[in-house]
Image 1 (cartoon, one colour):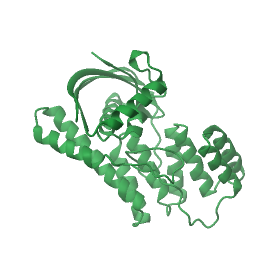
Image 2 (cartoon, rainbow, N blue to C red):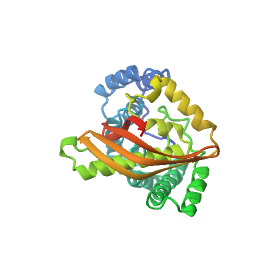
Image 3 (cartoon, one colour):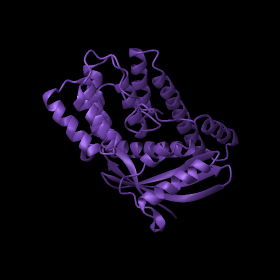
Length: 306
């Protein structure tokens, strides 16, 4: 799934401060880019391209909730622009909220029916929704060979998802949100069942990303402070996972019989049977995944085998 670049066609394009911020971001300095664009927006708070660039920088900084608010504000102030809707979809998809992602992409296409990026991303969303449904079906009946076959076909179909090279922030696969401002509820006020449902959606999104071999979306499911087993450094673990997933020709991962244990408002532990099948390996193990609230989304902070 692709994060869109900012479309040409605004009446007035931002000058050098926006370009400088974009250059800093491309050079790997998102903090410097944010400081530069914030200085510019302090004097030009309604500059559309500057605000769009700031939202992309927030994505790069893994400040998902702030990025969602920034893109949502853009859809309110500039409803004729399809790109903010598209990028909302990407962020919501990462959180496993495919319904909101679908709605945002449809809003993008209402503003520009010929917007190819949104059409492609909408296809990815429908594929992700289908994958989640098939995984749920397997959780209810793990012996259903027809469902497993359909999931395998779907994984092969969606294995080519890619990030738009025009985007300044490499956010991949899986999608996004309604155009109205969405404020994440304070953890203390959230209903336990709502938190459990969101955690299960995040787990489904993780399994779907792994199954489709979308490494960027798979790694995005993990918290910045994730601690790999076996003493591996986080960077080393990430490269190892990228290599192993990339080598597989096909992968199908099903989350079976999940049992949730809420530790507190921001921590949930999920014990489940992981049914894994690839072109070379098939196994079924009991796994424990610990999730934590990060920026309004559930992220994996630990995982282990029982």
